[in-house]
Length: 331
Image (cartoon, rainbow, N blue to C red; front, side, top):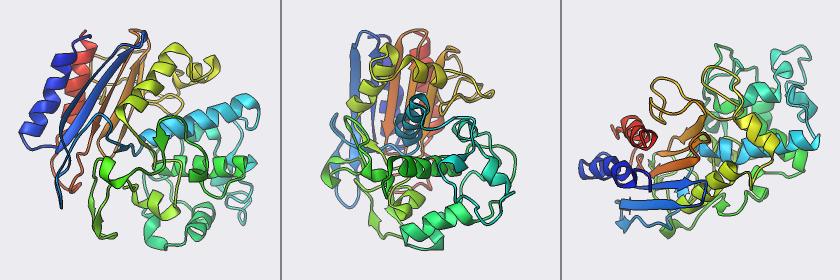
């Protein structure tokens, strides 16, 4: 398949150089042909386990595009929401004590495109351990504002909207779809961090602190294998797991760097500097990523456990992602 051996080489080197413990690379084309290669270890402490093709990964922010964006766009297509209406149409209690608050004017589309003034991240988990109280905190606090940036808060709010629309207490009560889950078996998962506040090496349990404290949210928490990721990508390439309307929106530019939920190519993009303009992609903090090139009918995913056993190391993940993307895009 298209430059597969060359695309696998940077991951092998990164492991040999001790930058990451392990990884899996997968490429699929519109005809369903796929190439997958597995490297290194799924866990190194306190035990060692090999990486396999069946290893489950904490997908982190890939949750935003694989699950939340898809569900929000489906809800819009059904007429359950209007993307240009404020979030208050699903979350009427959002900043309910300040009727003229700017937060009450934020729309679904603005959240999908990260076009809001919310901060990039907030340590919600430090405000308590009761998930219901933390949900109330998210909805009632006066959020500090700044320039529009990529923000977890946008998708935490979209996740809360999905809970209300689907009448579930937790987003994890929603079936995430074939090949994906909200947790995974410990001994079949790529380990993430030796968590300083949960006091254990995480494996099969969500790494994202806020998602863990909220007991499920729209910005993180999904688990999947390389083949589930490639199945999802192939479905978008062929239109078999999403409507034409949804696929058109995830390809529609909302800003220089973003579409509805996804990223589009720019200089320094994780998908490679030579990506075709009709490519979309997204990454996850744990070391995951997915890119879909509609023009050339192919997609690829790089899944690593780059934060095992700690996030505080130079894994070189940014350069690794671009190296893999550049090789695939050159095909």
